[in-house]
Image (tube, rainbow, N blue to C red; front, side, top):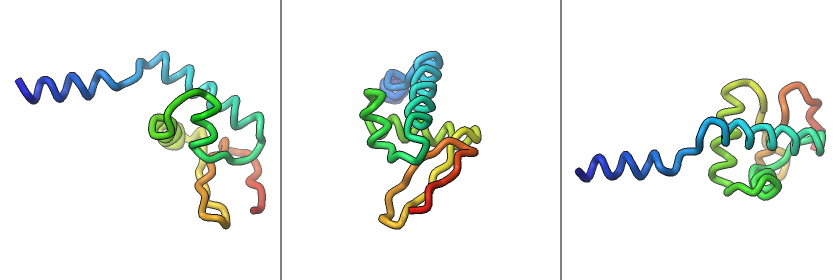
Length: 89
């Protein structure tokens, strides 16, 4: 019973596939607007999503080859669309 409750609770926090797709489209729009890398926190605020969930979506997008992440000289992780020229920071 306890294990079943834990599994149901875990699944209850998952987003639907259509919601994920919509949020990923919004992420792409935000990254296109700037033309350079953005931290996950900034992207999350722009699309109205918690930083942790935004980070998870970005990691899924990275695995699919849509975005890349790099660290600037200030040790800040910035996300950028694949194929965009990385700004020299």
